[in-house]
Length: 86
Image (cartoon, rainbow, N blue to C red; front, side, top):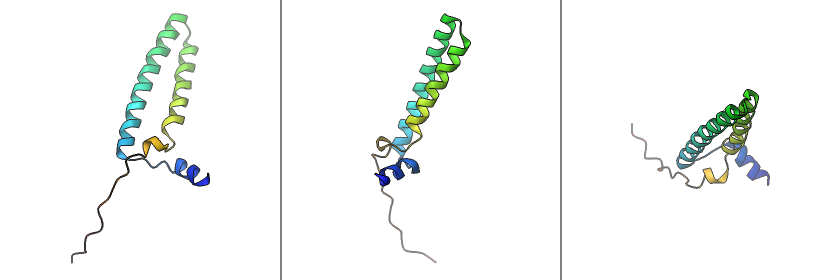
């Protein structure tokens, strides 16, 4: 269990995981902004707008900041070291 917790806190993700995180962040922030604006406008409540946007941001941070396994599926195979040239 401690090794899994350590992997989560290290936050290492691969390049495809970075693209996935970028898509998730963009989609969630745009959707949350539009929905919170519409509900806040409909109910005439600026506080509701900010609360909804704040809660969605906290949920988003908990979703994308830790290095979850879905962000590390496609490991990068680096080339081996080539002989040194002088």
